[in-house]
Image 1 (cartoon, each protein chain N blue to C red):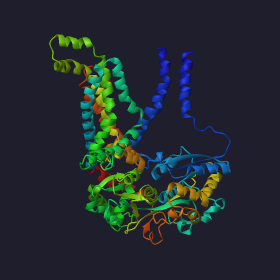
Image 2 (cartoon, rainbow over the protein chains, first blue to last red; image 1 turned 180 degrees about the vertical axis):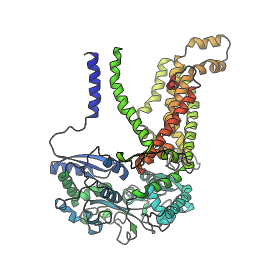
Image 3 (cartoon, each protein chain N blue to C red; image 1 turned 90 degrees about the vertical axis):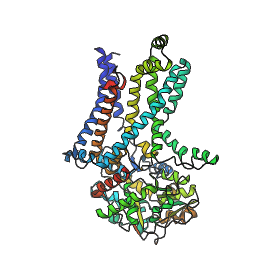
Length: 347
Length: 278
């Protein structure tokens, strides 16, 4: 081979690696984009077998990651799993398509109280997948009296034992709720007051963590943490000394739901997938596996007594009376960022 | 000139993965607007103005400070290590270098995660400490843990370049110094160390640069309590979505690193190693 030929070959190899995507056969397929560790993979295989539709499955870590990926356009997903406030934003920016509810008959299985929420009135775009609360988890062997409120996270006695969430919005929500403000406030004075609270709390905080919070609390490296209810279920399974409480000041009620983006290539397949995921036996299987809470009563009935009766996963209506759902923060996100930077630039 | 043809694929590679991204970062840094709508950007220096305010200066100074300390520690630990290894017989020497490099075959993130189980309150180290009757220590989620993570992860980058320069030193020069009556310390100060400067400078550059821009180590071992400049940049891209400000901070970080490399290369009379950039 001549040197020129070799050089050309090298170019082709390079270009080839760049263009590897896009090849495929005729089997219908859908691209699904979900949170990491948020499904029982058996369910995917079962769907492929029953419907003959191949599933390409990817995962993301935050709503913001998902948003950027969707907005950039480069990839086309058929089903994605954003949370409440992100659905609100995506709808406003016209990134989603309306669902054809005739193709999703299982939607009728979902408990009324999880439908028709502010983030998607009439559920025109989304079908709830999981829901839950945010609360405090603590180790009963390390903390001798029961914790009941967000204010307990400001108790000097627990210095160095508290793990907060490494999330601008969730940690601010804790401080706002402690002060009795709405977690969706757009009032700068209230946000400033919340910042002051977080600065005051910082010397007591052991760390601000993301998913690693689970390991740290389960291992007993810290006694108190702010966690999502579904994680709490899994953590208590691993360490029965842990206790989860919904703080008395009220907390965040959240939903992760399935939606179809505008640039989806296989809307029909996507609706089949959403319907399949909403089937009670499938939802039960996922719930059993990931520990989060299903919005489908029939699915809940299929779970073990232990999970079904758990007040962590399925609080009574009374317990979640005092909750708020996040609203789209796009216009105020700069303030969150400034507050968080000011907090973390302190020694 | 025939070889020139072979450089085309590499030029293409450089273009796609170095030049274009750099131009994009520059473009973002000097504009503002909704980061997702390319068409609506406007030229602006606001991002830079915003950076030069006390709050970001504090973060920058902290980052420089930690990067500097970790570079000094890796140098103090790494130089003797490189010297000791270079004095061994070739067979043993290769073995030692191999043992040094093997941990690097493992993913950087995994190695850093491993420290969590060592340093935690119920971690291995504290379990041993409490076994012998002492009170457990707070080893995690502070600056010392971040420094430890940096030194641990970047030490090989200091040792390897110094080692490779040391092994190439002409033994005749050392023997000459000894013949002429220089003590071992004099030989080291007057002959060995000056000849190894280029390795030291490469080492310093290779440690300082990643230490300055890391965000993983400060996040995992520092518990996100005190941000480094890398964390603030990550925050702009992943959470806030202000790619313009993130890009301008990246540019400032690059300039900072270039200045540091320029300064260190002043000490390199041979203009080798990392100084070759200038």
